[in-house]
Image 1 (cartoon, rainbow, N blue to C red):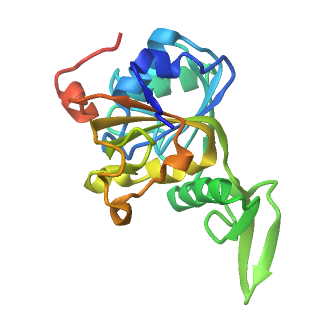
Image 2 (cartoon, rainbow, N blue to C red):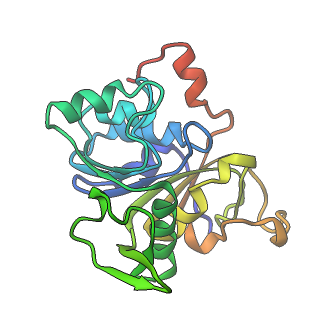
Length: 235
């Protein structure tokens, strides 16, 4: 039952070309930077990446895009503070984009983890985002059908964990991470602190270990915003 892995490199080595990958985080909060950078070193291609945004600067998801790992982004905010990496690839026709309203994105991921194949939402009705999607009227209001999102792998970041994979999160870093952990076939988590099995109060566990396949200890994780202030570039 011990799911700890000795390094980020070993944990992501199983991710192949063409995989669909969910990456946790809301901007830099809860973003598993070390796992993403280990994935760049590993070098799989043609990835479909599901995240809240398409990266900032030249680290994390932006670096994955710059290094040619990503062929499609599914996200809500492709243009953030410094979206140069995505913008250049998109204008060059080298990356596809599926734009999803933020609440719809969260619900599509939640539905994927809960085994719900589709749901109806009013968000996007009457816009280009609704083209080709079934529509229905409920109580006098029009809704469009959205399909659940699942992934082959998820990379997430938590604060504390135990060897069985039970996780807690730090404040806003919780965001998409618990949802993605449930919606992927294989979930890899990085944690800042590893605690003995049984030492985390069950009432405080946000992600139960049943959803985690591998856990990597990163004692002093870097923050995307701090890296970008230093104008860091990876690799």
